[in-house]
Length: 193
Image 1 (cartoon, rainbow, N blue to C red):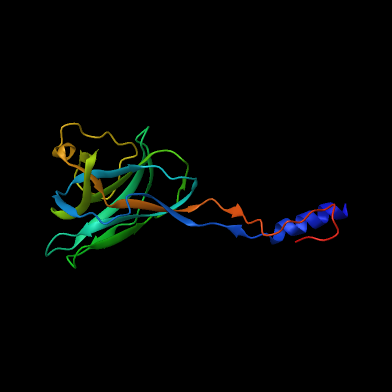
Image 2 (tube, rainbow, N blue to C red):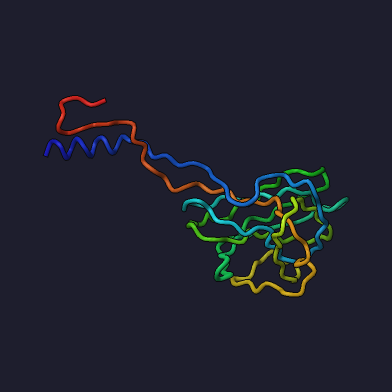
C-alpha cells in the first residue's frame, strides 16, 4: 500500500508539459497577390503533428489601401468540409505588410487530420503573400457577413483556382499535455535518481 501511495505522490508532482505548435506555412512569402472581397479563401491545407487545442490563425499580408478592413478566419475539416471553429473579427489597416493573428472565439480540440485554414474579408484588395509552388487554394464566392457556413462547398470555376502558391497562413495550437519524466524512481530500490 505504501508503494501505491508513493507512486501516486510522485505522479502528482510530475509537471504537465504543453507547448505551442503550428501547422500551415509560417514563412513570409516573397510574392504578393491582391485578392478580391466576398470570397472565403482556403489558403492552406495542412495537418498538425499531434492533437491539441487550437488558439489562432495567423496571416501575412496587408489590409486594403486607405480603408479599414474587417476579416475573420475559420478552420474546416478537409475531408468533410465541416466547420470546426471561427475566429473573432479582426480589423486591419494599411500600416504595411505584417503578420496578423486571429484568435478563436472558442478554442476547439483538433486531431491529426487535414484542415483548411480559411480567411474572409469585406473590402477589395487585401494583399496576400506567398511563395511559388504548385499548390492551389480554394475559394467560395459569398458576400461577407462574418458568419461562416457550417459546411462549405468550394467553387470549381472561380478565378482563385488559377493561382498557385504556398500562402503565408498558419494555425497555432497547444499540443495535448504530456507528463515530464524527470525522475527515475524504482520502487524496488531504496534510493532514486
